[in-house]
Image 1 (cartoon, helix red, strand yellow):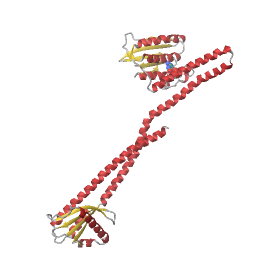
Image 2 (tube, rainbow, N blue to C red):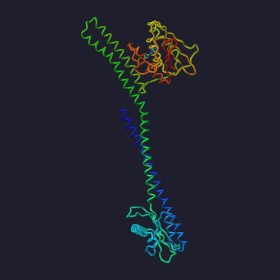
Image 3 (tube, helix red, strand yellow):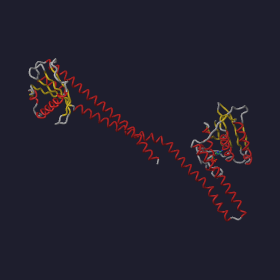
Image 4 (cartoon, rainbow, N blue to C red):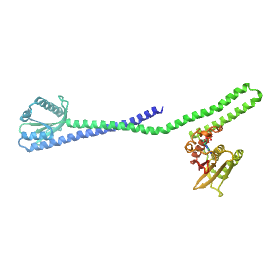
Length: 431
Ligand code: ADP
């Protein structure tokens, strides 16, 4: 399920970013290509201005000069005297003569078609010559050209010079630019996909972990509930045929297992409340030493039953009030004391203590019981986790410490476990 979500999220992230990137690239290409085209046209116009000025200063148009200009600017020149191609064209019109003549014809047609609409190119009598630049597409070759018709007024007959500049180099440059952009975009899309895969993987990790824990929680809860339920069902079955003197024993079993189930369900409800942010903590200023003393008094009889010496150490000076939920903190102390009594053998010692340092309260439960191995210390706050050797204890579901952890966390505090001096464990709650 998560793999599908991961793939979809990756495609979504990479797709959206790729679409934005492609749109940006297209906008850039459009602006850049129109700019290139405009610059090229302006440079063509400037060249034509220079050529026209040169022509005006010359008394005779020499073939050397025309050949030089053609070679310099990659231009094609046609000189027409009274509409008839001049000698220069004929000298150059060898192999490709028909193609050149065709191009010349097409250029003249294009010029004439714009002549009718455009007044700009009408020759101005105040100048020796006039010229007009335009763009046209050759029907025979399909190529685009800039064309200019220069009309020389200083010569007796109407001398026209047609200059053509092919747009092929510009188109080639534009094509190369597009090709580079496609390559860059493809590489960027690939990198984006990889990045999105890693990024969404990181985002999904805590959700997957949470889901794994939920599944484990449900599995463990079902397992824990099944045992007392099986006992209740078999006891109820036995009740049907049991003689009356044994009936009470079966009913007692049913009631005990029912109470166990109820305790387990209560613990699970507490934890599910903390998961759904419905864990209510109502802090108020409380005297922690009084709260600890009450817990001590409540658990002392239980400790005595097991011949365990339960002691309490409180600071001699009056403590400041602590902002905490008294019910919940009592619950934490009860869990710790209950565990300490459960995992400390007879004639052991348990010490409940409290001290205050640098605005923090340190509340500890220390025992000299069976202790906790280092590898288990990290796991005992997990739900339904019980250290192997304590599995036989029937009243323990492995939820106590996870509830204590959630309560302390809801108070913004911390809970730690360490080895006690001389064996056993010490649990410290810092508030
Ligand atoms: P449980 O209900 O099983 O005690 P907890 O979450 O309270 O569940 O504790 C988890 C496990 O941590 C216990 O099963 C036990 O193995 C270990 N543990 C907790 N407190 C102590 C302690 N004082 N001494 C030794 N082991 C402890």
